[in-house]
Length: 259
Image (cartoon, rainbow, N blue to C red; front, side, top):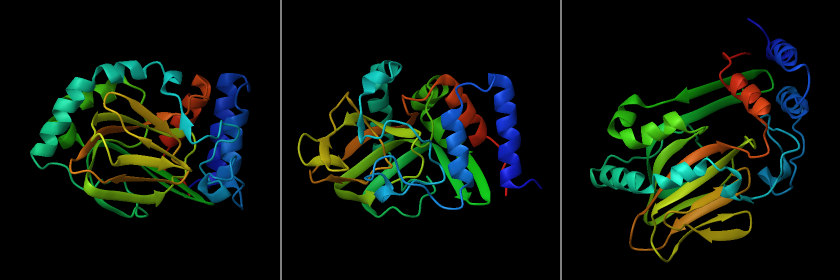
């Protein structure tokens, strides 16, 4: 079986052949971090408490919040608000939401439930890389409207209906892959007492509006209202990434496990 270093070397060789070697410097930096004996510094000391992960693309804008207008295709997701609200509310009413299966064991929460449509589980160490994308066919069959969106939109990572029940909290945490941002579309949000903090800024969710943030920054959420908060949670590629970089990273995420 190939070592991780050998697999990276072969993959980069193929990328350089197809691209002529141009436009790959940040991707090459990603693989340098993946293979590094020691973790490098984050681009912003507030990301991951200043320590990058092995899933780190250098040179991307490091900021807690991003403007959804940088991703024009999100307008089609916003236009689907009514259908997502109807479907998500029906799933909640039927009692079909449960703790998410996104594969993370570091989350400390109360009153957070979800209806998973896709998850991205990563297993990374200095000598190993594995990625599993789970698609939840039974859930997609029960949520055909959202499943149709997933088939048409360039989402990446964890996609699900997300509910924070009255009194619910998700305590501070961060992720490891800075090339992915989190996008929330407010579906049914209480007017008061319901918000998210990313780094040191608190923002409320708003119905029919997006919140787009980098979850490598510490973030936590709460619902101090008497009503559940319902939103559509998706992962999207960082807007700084070029089509070539997205193709290269996507290809690696679909690579067979190595190490």
